[in-house]
Image 1 (cartoon, rainbow, N blue to C red):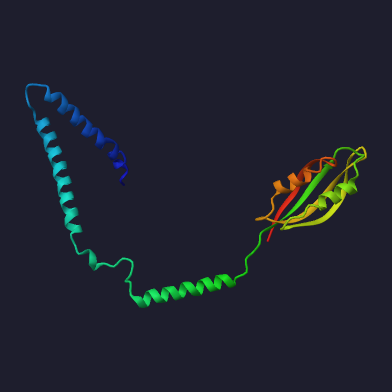
Image 2: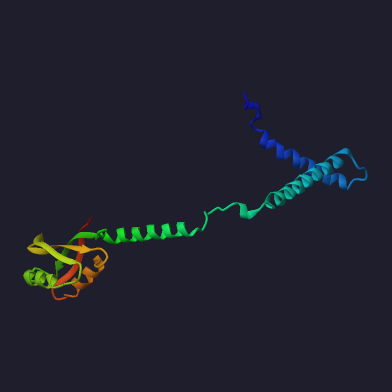
Length: 189
């Protein structure tokens, strides 16, 4: 039904541009025309509408600002009630048990060669102790040509221990350890 009005917004600014061009060219011509007077009328209408809007804005804001209390009153009874609620909430939150985020990590510890003593390497890795670190099971996994690697699991608290810490500490045993890789990293709560 209104399909014929689809392009109205497209052509309306074009009309204003054409009026402005005509006004520009007629300013330099010697004869004033009806177009220049119509452009001047349009400009005056726009100025008048803007001035009316500016006059209405201050009139609306001259009302009594104290009549509206947007954030509620500051009665002593209400403030005491709010303080009591906040204290109850803080006590309830303090009683609530904190959940400690933990992660299960499985590391691959690779020796230098097949002659490396893997039992000593495992003992040295397990000798790393830190708050929030619990070592788990380990096993020797064959790699190739009689070479084996140590797979060892651990549970760490996320806030206290990271994988970088573990890798740095294990790599400090340079006589036994060639490299360390993280095989499994699972979050648990």
